[in-house]
Image 1 (cartoon, one colour):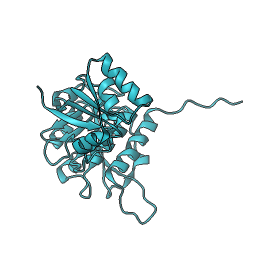
Image 2 (image 1 turned 135 degrees about the horizontal axis):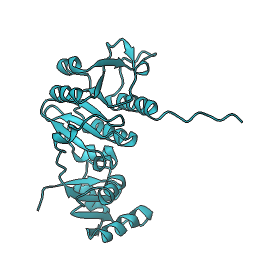
Image 3 (image 1 turned 90 degrees about the horizontal axis):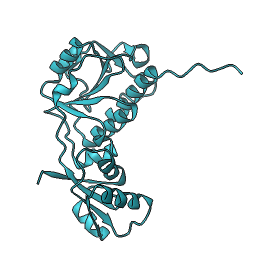
Image 4 (image 1 turned 90 degrees about the vertical axis):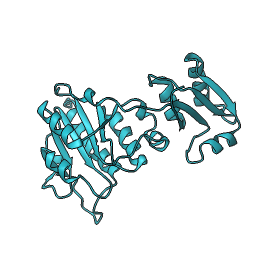
Length: 251
């Protein structure tokens, strides 16, 4: 049997049933759940012939004390990172990536995956070393998005960015010392948005590899934003530029 990992919560379990190529090995549903989401899980489990057991809620608490499981757990195949070669396609105007330079907190990784999937990023890139992995906590924070957006672990992030630049991608890194703000640059076309780690920001070599650096304008006394919040701000500005609203018709 392949290695498995435990995920919890209805978003994650439903995504594993609906969107993942490899379905869960087994689902555990609390005997206290008898609502629409629980019935949806049961129906999908029958459809995909996934074993489902109804158990006391206390059993779920014992198996996953660190997870807010909402009354449902699933044993799913341990997710292998998508191959690095999948990145290296000729640049197209609608293709874009998010690169995370050493994000350590699995909750931040999951939150970044969730936003990346929401705006249509083609893949999220992380270094193999000095980075959070796709733990149960990261999957829970991703709320199902870990099953929908490719996560690519690369040996050398700076080298990967250089190769993507050679293919026609424009790399934009977030750094507090930048002179331009996020709202002054063009984020359309084949793009890689590069975000730094908690506290440290971008590593020197990563920073030097980026075509340009931008900052989020700050008016208050707060010096910086949490990396998942900063990522959401940057991704949605890029999304806004890439999907301009249609001109309003005069009445």
